Image (cartoon, rainbow, N blue to C red; front, side):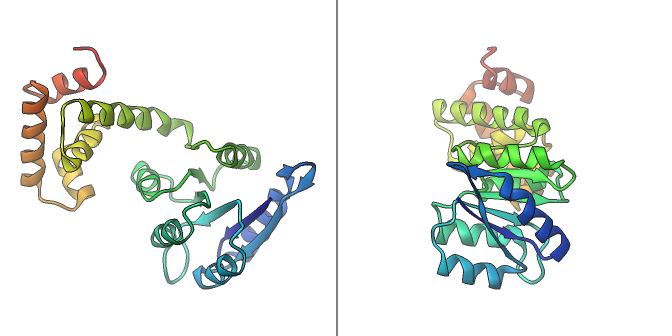
Length: 209
């Protein structure tokens, strides 16, 4: 098993490389390589295309981790990516997952939580902090409802955010559109679902109406 750790702080990177050796495959400890920035990471990925997992810090110098996450997903879609970050607010977590991350671990987490998360991802699962799993369930439910009512991709995304309790202003900011555009989408969603307000829409999304 080969794991790449992309982290600019040397002490943190070295500590992670050591801790990750606890991950084993067929009794052999994981082979861990470290990169201090995206340039070094890119060279390692080009030279070794057989990584089983990449652990990526979001706060990197130069090209940020969020942007680099998208790059790796395009160039190496077969390699699962797990984000490790001190920025662990809901918006950051969900943005990373939308960019294609297979997991998100807060830097405040103990080592055993990190190792457990990586084991799940290596087994083909998606891992999120417990406090965000309910939100993800709501989004999946919203996606199913969107398909049932024939919503457009934009309307489906708005519905996901409505299901997360976001206001029109919040949604406009997250999707980088005007609040008026969000209102148009919300009205279209209500019409398609045969409801007249958010509460009714959420009841339909939850299968309670």
